Amino acid sequence: MTVRAVLGIRRWRHNPLCRPTDRHEAWGALAALLLMLIAAPVLGWLCGSVTDEALQQAVRAQHAQRHLITAVVVRGPSGVSRFAQDPEAAVAESTARSSAVARWQAPDGTARTGRVSTASEVTAPGARIRIWTDDQGRPVIRPMDTSTARTHAVLAGIGATLLVAGLVESARRLAVWRMMQQRYGRLDRAWAETGPDWGRTGTGS
Image (cartoon, rainbow, N blue to C red):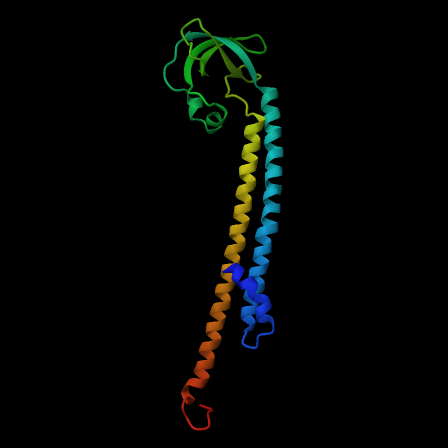
């Protein structure tokens, strides 16, 4: 419908049967098409760039504040870890994770014991596993990597592009609906003025 209205601009320009609303509809369709082809991708790119910059900063901060250390298992797995239910963990980790009670040393040298998340297949008591901790030695999920952050940014940009295009098309449809309502209103008024004299002598019928 949009493309057909745009192609009709040149045809309708000098057509005496063309109504002003037809031309307005065609120009509105052309403006909407340009916005969807140019403005929407530009805004999507800007959104993706801003999101990527923010996520890359978060990645750098996470890698600076989280540390991969070795822990010793005290008690074996006891079910699925809560980290496996975390959306970020689901993106960062591709293997099933379980929880176990382990002992490790915090960055300040303090001995810590607690339940940790691990993807290791060897989790018998005494086994050594690798876990992530923060600066205080508390267990945390694996930091986001650069490629995952960029994927999120690309998806954000695509989503913004589709959202802007959808809003533009919705605005165009609303404008067309308003023009149609006004057109019908003018027809009703014209009929109300002409209808009572229809068929009478001297009315031009």
